[in-house]
Image (cartoon, rainbow, N blue to C red; front, side, top):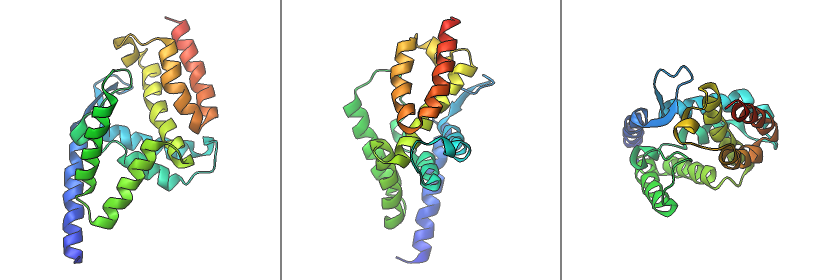
Length: 194
């Protein structure tokens, strides 16, 4: 492959992922001026990793964690955002996201596409220390937004304290018990004041 072909593929991929800015999530910005988009969410998570890396329970490679967080929602360009509080057929969603990963990462030069798709799979499986920590941050950030917006999507979705604890707690604590210890106090306080 010539370098001009590789560059053309990379530019095509970068133009394609601009669409992530148009995928609107349920979570509002903390100032509640509007809903955040998936690109903003991914950037914010990368910052969470950079700032909170010392809270990981296991040794992590923060560069790999940041890469995972920057690419983890790219499939939403085709598959859309599916909040954890909405019920859906997981097998259909998984198939849709797999097809999206094949298409979008397939725009890149082969080696680079394989590398990013492999990181996406690793994030989804949440079996490595890097992926567990990345997943914990992916749950922590919307939790922070819900706390800071007086319940945000929890109020809209009539989500209970038990649901928050089960849907957020297990994932956050698998990557960082310290972060869940703090977040669980916020959850307790939020629901005790309702």
